[in-house]
Amino acid sequence: MNSVSVGEHELEAGDDLVELRDSTDLLGDPGALRTRLAADGYLYLRGFHDPDLVRAARRDVLEHLAEEGVLDPEEPVEAGVVHPDYFGGEFDMSAASWTHYPNLEELAEGERVMEFFAEFLDAKPLALDRKLGRAKATGEFTGFHVDRIFVGRGTEQLYTVWRPIGDCPLEQGPLVVCPGSHRHDRLRETYGRMDVDRDVFEAPFSEDPHDVMATVGGPLATTDFAAGDALVFGPYLLHGSLSNRTDRFRISVDTRYQSVEEPVDGRWVGADPIGHYDWPSDDETPMADLRAEWGL
Image 1 (tube, rainbow, N blue to C red):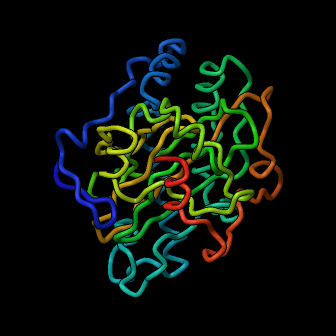
Image 2: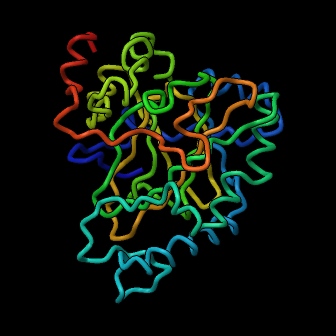
């Protein structure tokens, strides 16, 4: 690993940033996978999806981005270069726009992933209807957060699968996780019990990786992802992303799965699920105030 960044904060490989632990060898052994996830908070699975399907999904997305005029017309579409006049930060591929991406639907609800969760959950799996697809432009990143604050009205046995749509080396801003943070009792009991719609607060716990490590523990972990790789994690794992330091869009999709027998967060299912609301920023309680109250 080389030097990377999360926003304005630099990270170096070594004590603060390590490679994700590879759990690919545990595929086919759901008990071992459950034990590993309980210990680390995540499962990194190399080649989980067919790389050819991922590449086909990438072509779907890039063709749509070209139609939307957000790619550089002077560069090949397949390069995914951000238009020099594009200042949107992130191109949202969620909700109804999924009709443009048939291969992404196969990744999200196809036989491969549904059979995995049938074994992992030992139950019939349900994929939540609202999927989250993102194309992050140059300089963009995601602050550290837990998914529970967005999808906390159903079962706690809810699992996210994050997958890059194409290769995603460190410089393009892949996901970065805080291993073991799902077992931090104070974090779970405070931040992890918040609800962005009910409580209306500044959602990221932090945008500073050094702050995260000082507060929750470290090191952080990530890797150079390849097309077909997937990262599985639960609702209490603190995670964010590195900054995209390239001139190309970083394209990714995350989807969530649970047993059909467990309670479901109604905001994320149905014909046109809303997900979570977009509250005006001036109505939000600052995270600094909440963390002071929590002692975090």
